[in-house]
Amino acid sequence: VALAALLGASLLSWPEVRAFALPGFAAVLAWLGAKWRLVERGVALEAPFVFACLASLGLEWALAALSAAWGFSAWARRGSGDLLGKTAEPIMVAAALVAASRTQAHPALAAPLFVSGWLAARSFLTMGRLRAGSSWIVLVVVGACVAGLIAEGQGAWTFAGLLPLVLVAACMRAQARAEGEVRGTLGSLSAMLQRAHPNTSEHLERVAQLAERTALELGLPSERAKLVREAARLHDIGKIAVDERVLDKPGSLTPEEYRHVQLHARYGGEILEQVSELRAVAEWVHRHHERPDGKGYPDGLCGTQIPVEAQIIAVADAFDAMTGGLHGGQRRPYREPMAPASALAEVERCAGTQFDPRVVRAFRAAYERGEEI
Amino acid sequence: LEPAAVFLAVLGALSAGLVYQLVSVIPAQTRRRMLGAVRAFGRAIELRFPNHAGLNDLVARLARRSGHRLGLGPRRLADLEMSVRLRDIGLCAIPYGLVNGRTWGEWTLSETSTYDCHAEIGGAMLESVPTLARFAPVVRCHHTSFAVIEEAQLGPGARFDACLVKACAEYVWHARHRGAESARRHLRDGAGTLYEPRIAAQVLRAAEGWTAVK
Image (tube, rainbow over all chains, first blue to last red; front, side, top):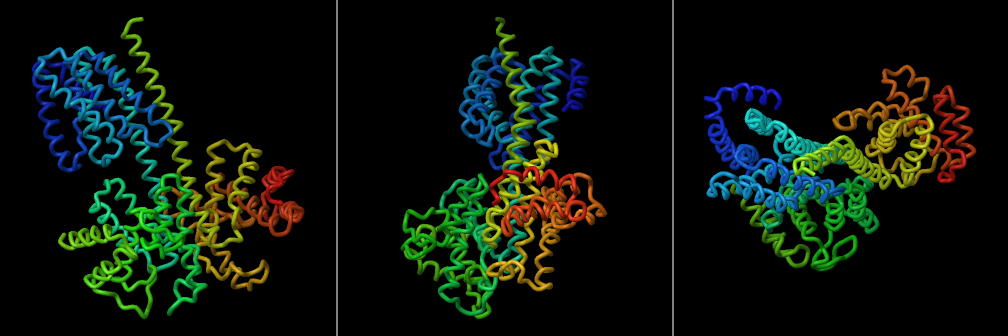
């Protein structure tokens, strides 16, 4: 950013360059915004627009309003682990509105400025979740805009306004990195623990994919669907605590052995409960062998008492077990893999007793769509 | 007051708050979340081998008390707790039937050596997880005697942590199975050979009057 600022400042010291600078920025940013909007599927990067626009605004008011909004949203989300989240968006919109209302340019510019401000707010709120490769361009463009403002004699205010902005971005980045580290650690450790009991890793990955697609088909938000995927990947983690001689036993289990294996659902919930981010996932894992007719385990819940996410995992798990020739996630030498069509028919036959019919319908739709792809 | 001065003050306060978030709150949150993830796997091992239930918490508390007496700062203490909770992660690869339903001391030599592999397995597991790789040497050496650790190619921090984790873990194990007096005697007798003498002395002091393991 510093390098870009220096470069920009020296370039902008020529009036001829300055005359073309802002329209040039606007064109580049419009192109980048359009491109990223397509690539990032709605995660806009129009933030730099606001800086270009601020050059023509009552800068003090605009910066103060934005900074106050950041401060307020940081305070509102304190201790939640997510410094700035969705709840901050209305506040940022209000700040953008204030900025737009202070414009000293033509009133016709107020609406585009408002939209720019709102998009900018959204960009900064999601900045921490962007791919690492794309953010440097944002920083360079912001740096160049800063240089433009400094060249216009607004250096002190620009710095005062930008410092919290840069810090917010740094905080969000640090949080995103921390979240990635924790999730990565959890994923690696669970993969290793489950490799100690083979046969399961490919099954878990397939179940995770099927469960996520089904969740999206059911209309769950994408964040929720990702959690369902994570839960599906971890749903058999409780088997770490089950005797592998029972899990790998060829032939049928005695009632006592069956009860021992059934404990894995409760164990899985207990293990995941230790991780604060995965409390919800722990509940789904705990309930993934419950049945709508009340004949499931560990607690014999029925109907709506069972979280829909747990029912999604149950359907995906059963389907993959049938098509992969597995039983309870373990390969049984006597069990031949079923054809997908037969497995789907079997899942549908059990709708209403073993599985939630709504989830089964969504599963079929998601599976068929996946097959088409 | 000039509005501009008020705005600058607000922006300054906001920036200070954000810097605090960045250098203190977020790293502390990260450590706490990582510890939560590690605690989950400690819980998994305890569920697999119920005779280990509660050991992790006891060893972690004793290690923190001892580490505090040995002058470790908050970050080192947090790392020490991570090492304690990760030390037995290799037990996931030890056969279920080897530990459950067996009494202490009835293992054959071959079974003992199978069980002893858990430190090496745990170390190898952690080496492949980038965020936890730095704990691998401590986990690998947490049953290694002081004399051997001295000769191992470990950094001073890892060597110190390995000695401390070993002393605390073995004290708690002995106290639970053979009583506190036996554990104290074991640590005293082993100082200089099995245990680093200064660490053993501080662990004994930290355990004085501590009723949790009795």
